[in-house]
Amino acid sequence: MDKILSLKKIIIETLDLNKAQDIVSIDLKDKSSMAEYMIIASGTSSRHIQALSEQVLKKLKDSGIKDSKIEGKDSNEWKLVDGIDLIVHIFHPEKRSFYELEKMWSELIPKEKLII
Image (cartoon, rainbow, N blue to C red; front, side, top):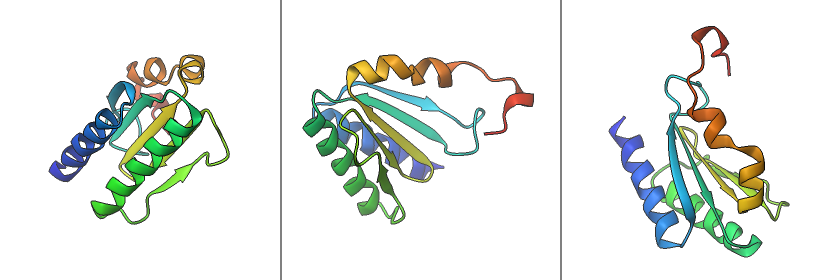
């Protein structure tokens, strides 16, 4: 567990140092079995979003998460970096407000609906 918290801190620092905007971390432990945490951030352009996703991927791999990968490589407005127990979404601000992941995942989910 400490490894995940440490990795989450490294990823948030990496995003911050690389000028990501509106960085949010969501604890998924009681909401989903797909990951421990979700981090959501915004980039200012398609190039910025791509660069941020590559930086996050490098940090994950450097931390021993060899199976990590980037999803959405063809998209200019969104990237998902799958770090197994840590998922990182990087959006263009307009797409981020359209999908509202923070709202969806921040709400408490009744246990009987916790199948994801």
